[in-house]
Amino acid sequence: MTDAFHIDVPLTDGTLAVIALSGEFDIAAAPAVRARALELIADGHPDLIADLSGVTFCDSSGLGALIGIWRCAKDADGSLTLAAIPDRLGRLLSVTGMDTFLPDHPSAEAALAARRGNRTTA
Image 1 (tube, rainbow, N blue to C red):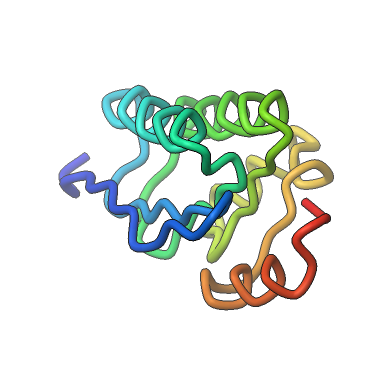
Image 2 (cartoon, rainbow, N blue to C red):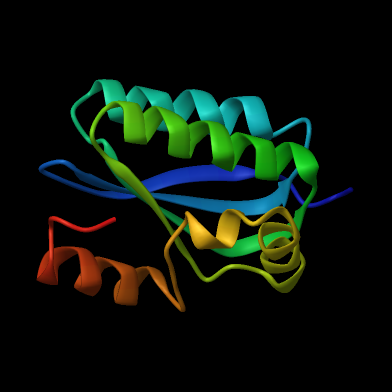
């Protein structure tokens, strides 16, 4: 595991925020991702888009963090939408059935367009 992990928030707009992740989303990175997402929710941005286009690796810890973020967003009457899901994470989501709960889009731009077109859906 060599890719340094980064968390960026390129957009906050009303209840919406984009959290962009890059590098290896593993046991070392998962707590920081969860903490940053919960900060965004607490700051009034419960509708999150996780841009995963820069994620080079994701293990079960990363998946667990996404599930925890989804639950917290849902508890705050928000949502979690995934964008640009890497293949391995897509398989984890499918095997666990989480792909039925977490909407996804091919890019952050597509997810933003969908959210802005219909703010009442997940």
